Length: 328
Image (cartoon, rainbow, N blue to C red):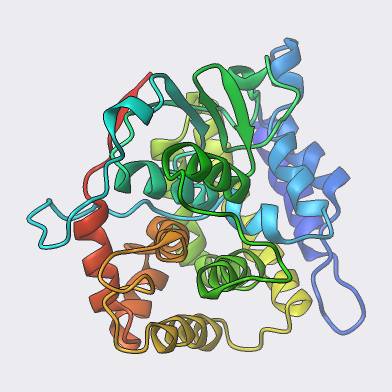
């Protein structure tokens, strides 16, 4: 009880610190102390770094890792009664051994999964504990997603998709920035704009932050003690972090920014079923993958209710279908 009280006190002090003008300024060192003190009395190396990966994200200048490593809920995809056909590659060029190291609620991981699912590439999933990261101790790369393809390590979601495309879609050329086509332009839009409006929406208020972290702790790879602390301390921290991200990306109204982004995407479709025409292209899969984790959160429900994206999203659910994965 004394330890919990100390955690509450330090966390309260941390989250109430402000700059002039009332903008919240989180101090990662104090937050580390607050969260570390509520972990188990365990001197192992993995527990000493309790919650540090998430906190390091809080203090980075880029909000991208923060917004996206902790984001919301994975959509339940519709059963495949599809009028749109998937595009499985010829059996001889499908990788034989594919393993995805991921966080279940990570939009970048879901972007890779959307590609794998659409192209019917079977893969195993290893859920990484975001605190100890023991599942990826073997790798010099300490972020997710990591995709192992027949023994080769691929990292960074967009790069993973580019490299897989070269393997299984041999006729598809990778376009340079100078010569980018419509598909490449919108894939870059996903990484440079769409992802930045997610966190301020998902953690817009305390109830939505708790909703997100309830899913994260229920489906992530956490110990019992970690689940309790991550759910409440993480939700509180991310509520305040999201306010800083609003300022960083000049967002005044979170929902308006989300609705504008989704309407921009629907306008780009220009009446087509998919950006790729009669079937999804890599931009369709990227947008779907990034939105998949928030679809059934309150922010995602509001998005579908108040914009025109619902029909496209439903088509994508049908064509991408159920995950082709096997839990490792």
